[in-house]
Length: 159
Image 1 (tube, one colour):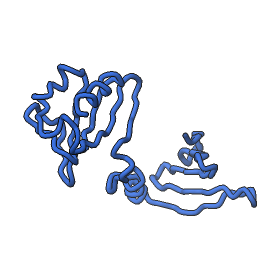
Image 2: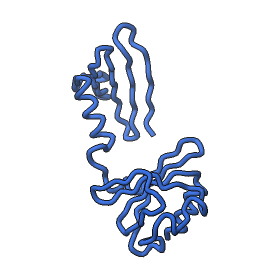
Image 3: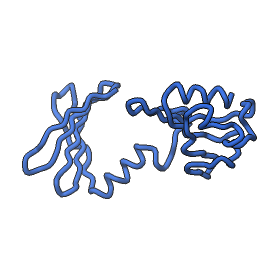
Image 4: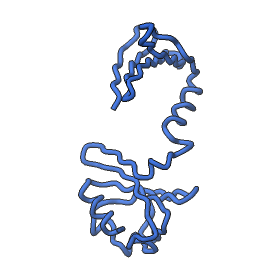
């Protein structure tokens, strides 16, 4: 995980110093007027150079691109997010899974596991909070929420 240091720049805004897992060093300065400046630290010269200045709107566009709002890499089909005890996982359903072509209600997902299917993504269609009548078909990526043990039970039902 990267290291981020935050500091106030009185009368200017905030500064974030970031050291990435790859060992790169960058600085992001967010001005009170919404501009963002990106700096890269050059180890050889021991200097920091401004590489780009973005407006507030441009920064939000880049954030969306970097955050995966417009393109989700294939590796993210099995991503996990943890917030204290709550976990959110993406699980891609395969043809060989026992839970395919059955509805969420038939599988009694919540009653048997305590986990919830909060979204179902298939090709360009996303169903948020699919109900008990939603039929799980091969190729669907399910977004599952619950405690780790509950998600494990749900995956066992789907396998």
